[in-house]
Length: 244
Image 1 (cartoon, rainbow, N blue to C red):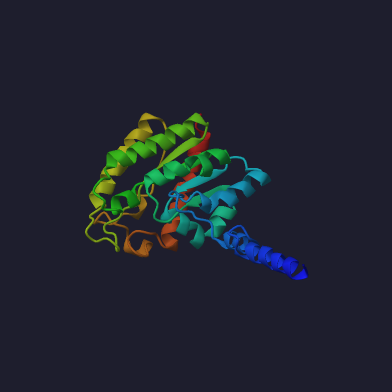
Image 2: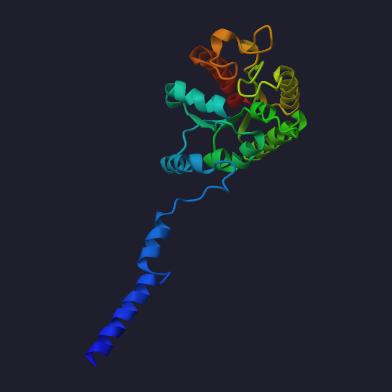
């Protein structure tokens, strides 16, 4: 009798050990890394920062800088520019305009800023997918602008920085495409009484690229370039916030 009970106990213990729902499997499930494959627009990057900002209370007349690497690197090189002002950097390196549009609610609207600076288009042009046109870039810029206006957020649209060539994709010749895109952006901004932030003019050289002394790679500004951008940015922000 005792041997029978012992056998049953061992059987039950062994069954639990090999049971797919056992504690070992639970530990394995808990140790799995969260899969962000569906987060195409990288919404997870600023989610916690956004939650913290909202819990602390957004500063009056705050401004969101929405863009890609130019904005992200700006905060890395000049963090004090953002910390001493009510400026919120929401740049993500490599992003194209439809990704900015997907992020617009989380990284702009939900923060209830006084204004948003939209810098978009270069990575679309640099992608060389064959499907991107300036008109498609403008569609995304228009959608973001309309969403901002709907939520009483002042819109600041950027004339993109001059770029003669992309070091990582020399088959692309972006200079004239950026000039044409900037013309579309400027025309749309004037039609809708949005503020225009001109990054192109103070940085351009005679080849329609960035002035050598102001850039690290012909695409991204160096510290001197960013300081010039700060001057024109502050002026545009002041103008936008005064608009009715």
